[in-house]
Image (cartoon, rainbow, N blue to C red):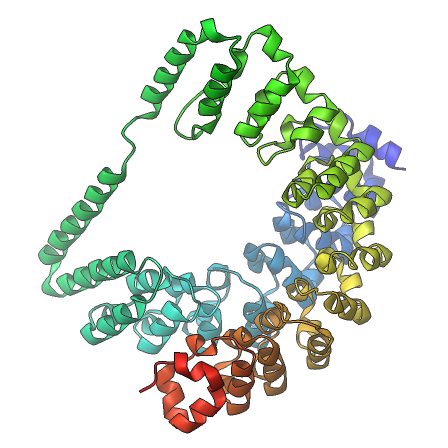
Length: 579
């Protein structure tokens, strides 16, 4: 059947041609295999699904494939109303692209429990408030949960909450992003921006941050403008001008002295004077290295120097090998065609700068060669280059089970691009996880539903799959505890679990205690209602993590006396600044 698909799509120019193919072959509108073939082999955009029948739009496999395939996640908007109202599918869609929140059903948007679970387990940026009912912007509980993940949403919450000191403080410091204080202070209400005591407290806290000097300066400018605004429009305008001039002075001091046009003319003139040295390897190597190292957004005609070497050097593989080394492979796309088409050359000089588009199609479609390339790089210890080989693989091979299974033993991330059928093949993941325990993070939900497989992954050191689990799994305390129990060493498992579980489980003392016991930093995601529980704090400190860095010392002192704090913190007490 795939041969017929290939003939049908042989002359297709762009995604819109799919509509024409379906018009001539209406039976294909309900053909699920043809839909997957289009996604894996043809042009596809976010509206392609709209050309197919309702049965395809209502198929979970189809919609999951769309929402988990970059950059087509927005195709979810054409899913059936049933699937747009399905909690698991909505969860997967928003995981794929936060903007899909716009397309989930109104019933789910108005389901506060679902939305709290969703915002607690998926980073959505400001999409949450942009695509949800206005009432959420004034909902303290929802805003609290959201700002822990995304400080930028502070700009969209209600004016009342933007003037709330507690909300503003949380937005600035709970998400642990160094620029959050300046951003949130900028978008805070006048009551926050003009509060001198609060300003002193904020700047004092910021002084312990990376780039604190720049942050304090930015905060001062915002505070100054807010105070000027209290004096009237004229005072504000004057303060704004001073601020803009100060900023401009800094930008001018850091600006590049040469314009793009001037730099390009200089380099072109230099190349014309190098023609007499076209047989000199050292000069040619130096000229090409300078050429390729230029920033593409400053100059034009990068790569023009590669036409300068004489014909003997054009055929010299050793010469081009040196060029590949000095340019980290960025010169590859400009190399002579015979050089690029030589399999041994790429095998010997695979580098970070080699783009898939520059590699001849014959090499990208050769499964044996690609496996040999990956194996050679792996055996020589160049593991970062093995990862880059994946990007050279032609789309046709993503449905080749034998190739994918073999390649995954060198680089499991190729499973992320594999076909739906392969992502559903549990046997492949069972084999690969012995070497790459995190490989199941690329699996289909049907594979992730196998709890025994999840436990096996954890036993081998896996943890990255946690945020790929369904909402039901992420709300299953028994499963989460079983995974923690299976962990043989301290890694990011506990931290990932606490970051990803549903809203209610973040309040579960048993789970929180189990997580912080093996990774104290997991306390960052524990709900505030139990975060300062004595048992949880004691377990967290015993893990060895500097838990106090994530705690409010004033609140801690208000709940416990010094002796209790010392008993909980153990040897870490000496690092805590408690009077």
